[in-house]
Amino acid sequence: MDLLIIILGLLIGSFLNVCIYRIPCGESIIYPGSRCTLCGTKLKPLELVPVFSFVFLKGRCQHCGQPISWRYPAVELLTVLLIWLVYRRYGIGLAAIYYALLTCILIVAAFIDMEHQIIPDGLVLIGCVTGLAFNLMGISINFLDGLYGLIIGAGSLLLVAVFSLFVFRKEGIGGGDIKFMATIGLYLGWRLTVFALILSVYIGGVVSLLLLIFKIKRRGDYIPYGPFIAIGSFIAMLYGESIINWYILSFW
Ligand SMILES: [Zn+2]
Image 1: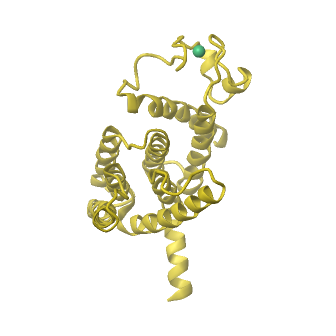
Image 2: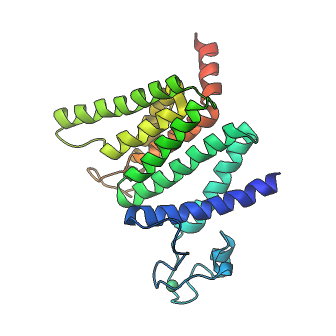
Image 3: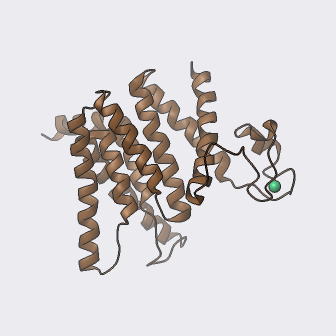
């Protein structure tokens, strides 16, 4: 079974690469087939095998010789790992599909945000529609819990955005982040949404500090918040319940 999940993860990762590249450009994610993003040559099946093609082609396009972005194999490997973790946690079934779908949305949003500093409305819409559909069917969480998650998730970020606009006179949180958090809230329910938000603040703080210390970013540079929301949400999705229960038992 694990091998099957790994192959499936690689294929999904390959599709997520297409989404990450094409959604911000407003291109269709289904048609046409994959091309080299540098010279536009249509790629043959052998050049499209996830991860392996990148290794065999030594990271360069066979046609134009230009280097292929490290992002492609990285997204594929990351997707395999995360999908496998979802499988380990939720097994096979509708709940696993539900969380795998959220995982895909998190990956695509994080990488698009890192590169373009936006979280596309189309992606948010897909997330809301699928999340709502699953909630109405009562898979994993119920409709009301999803609704509370949406309100708490989007509401907290909206408050932060309004606060930083009035107090610091600059945009601390973008509209994309707020909509992204609404989708996640719908998927996770209110408890895990609160947990994901708290985690994202801590992870964002630590990573931003490291980026400043190692001089990768300078003070005042823009650091996208979407990836931190994505990491926090993924951890909340897999381990949130256990961590919350452990916390309550240990401290209360
Ligand atoms: Zn090329």
